[in-house]
Image 1 (cartoon, rainbow, N blue to C red):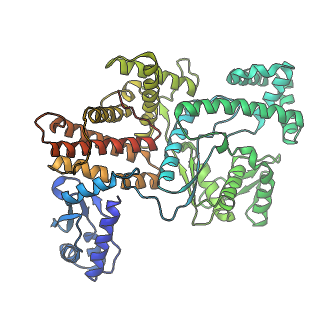
Image 2: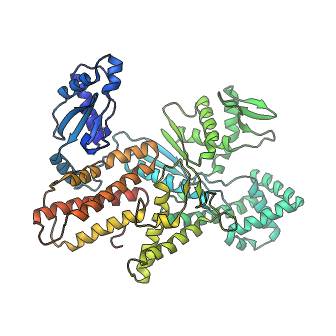
Length: 565
């Protein structure tokens, strides 16, 4: 149910009827109940534009507003605010109709676009660490949202599978001798051992560089060992993705190496278009407003991330037909993407109708405000963090109820992983955030456990009710109005979250919804014997609708719910 779109359409019709030649400024949600449910605040802007009194313009709009069953009352306040009050009968009917459908009334786009979401992107030959967490979680939720709303979403994992470190790893593997592939079971330690040799032994370092040349030249043995490294690394990534319950698999990998054959072509094309210049032996493109140029090819002939990124943009637009490309990468890469996007426009790889966006995010910090590390200052492995989340969740949930071992393991996995994901998604992604186990596993405040508990409580109520839900929804009071309206605002929130790539819009919505339901539950008995059956059915419908909304929205964030908690 796109409430705002419908109200905007009514306002535009009123402007047209009133002979006011202007595009309506979108309505906004009212800040206080006494100001209605929504407000149109555009009269002041129109007054400046037309040289008229804003209150007179507001009155002209109200007088010309078409009749619509969704509106109970329209009034003018202050200098020209138009307050829009929605009808309780319309809310009840619209909510019951929406919740008769699996998608809760949320429509798919009539004109979908191809959207590429580039996220996670770990380097191979290393284990994933906490630095990959935010990109993976935010990117997956964005892909889920866009897919649900009807876009053709292409998830791409632009893994780092090429570069000088592979020469080092192959050289070390060869040095260990035949049968040494078995040492790759701990690929992180293998990398550390190889790096130590590289840093301490110049002869080994030189040999490593020779292997880079061999690898780039297509040496069969080197390629075979390289593929082994990639296979082992991807196996580890898949384990992490499985634990995180995200939608990335090997089929979503579009690695750096997949663009290798196109890099020389990119350089030649930029040169042919007169965009390349030489600077200190390197081939670069100067971008207006930027002090330093974008390096396309180094003086030694090597390519950089920028070259690969340009090849990727060209492929995604020309071959995949992408109209939006979202790079979910930390904020420190903002300068890089600004230049890459500018050069992609200059070269014609991405026309103006293609949206290129850097979905940036801040750092994950510990309680002291420092970058999140192990106690000895090392990088925290992502798999260890997720395992710890499950263990800590066991402690949090067994404080309230006893479970058998199998059930405890299942519940703790859903609660623990959900807590980690929700804690990340519940803040503005552009902000740094403090990683705090106690806060994320709390039953109070804006946490996944609070939402999961609300859902489980409703499921318990519905299990206890032995009849069938065949009644009509009746809105008895202001609290129920607010709860019904909040549920109907789901589609507007989903579209805003997807449009701005801001998952915290949705988590804020969920917290408001769960909080409203808890207030409703505390003040409106449902199963008590003295509640009339028609009223009980109506209240059960509100409870059931809340649960369905929680389940659907949490699911889009990659967070599962529990019938019992």
